[in-house]
Length: 84
Figure 1 (tube, one colour):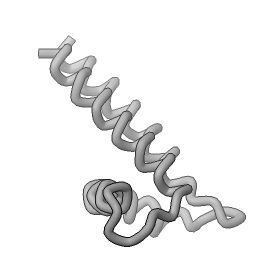
Figure 2 (cartoon, helix red, strand yellow; figure 1 turned 180 degrees about the horizontal axis):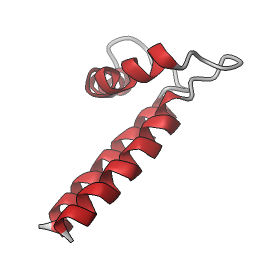
Figure 3 (spheres, helix red, strand yellow; figure 1 turned 120 degrees about the vertical axis):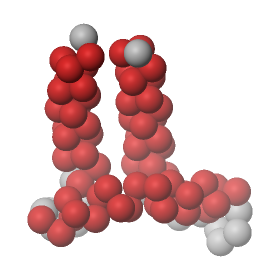
């Protein structure tokens, strides 16, 4: 059971890192990269919005993905401790 949960967290980490990388790119509207970027925005914005509300961008940088990674690591540790 723990390996399945661990794999889900790894997939989410990959999705978040892909979103971070694609946030630096401005693809042309309607391209396949734009479609991927919009899908990732739809997936991650509900998780990032509360963090952004509490912590505004600092110096033009959005640090909410780093905070989300940190919170996910903590949550992963709690889940692993409860199943491990």
